Image (cartoon, rainbow, N blue to C red; front, side, top):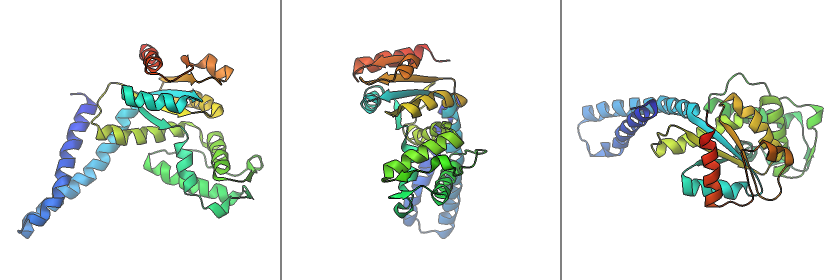
Length: 260
């Protein structure tokens, strides 16, 4: 049994113990209830640490497949459905934080230090959840002064500032955490964890292709669709014009052949 299998086995046992909590109403002896509640409380505490251990093990096994272009989302969702890949929107970290920013702070206004303070606070909350430490503080500069007319404008500004100041590799750590939630639910124990990050944003994906190597050497770029940036095309392990089961299978085979 490898580390991941051992963790999954222990997690399943602890979850089974926690699941017994709903049956306590059927027990009449108070001392038995107290004893079982103690075991259940410890199991819940153990599960928090076990999940962190599982996530670290997932990180060691991760292979990032960055899918860029106007067919990136279709390609990724088909890869999930047909080949069991784990997928995540490469912009979901920014979008989730964006939803937490009060609209009056930015809508039809120029960006400000107060807005960036909110960015920093919300990112700190997420960083604590996924054990990101020692990152540079997000500060407002004149180059980030822009008129924001929508939530999308605000999120794009946040994305620019995060990648500039903190580093886009945080997208990878965020994705590993999200994927781990699903993987542990499926009792995943594979030797390699293929995580597909998709986005049509050429600039973001070029940045990720560079910075995700701080997490793992297994980072692969795939260009999709008909409007493909020349630099990204040249850096890609594969170029596919349409998202089909056959094209995805070809890409995954190439990735497997090039794993470190």
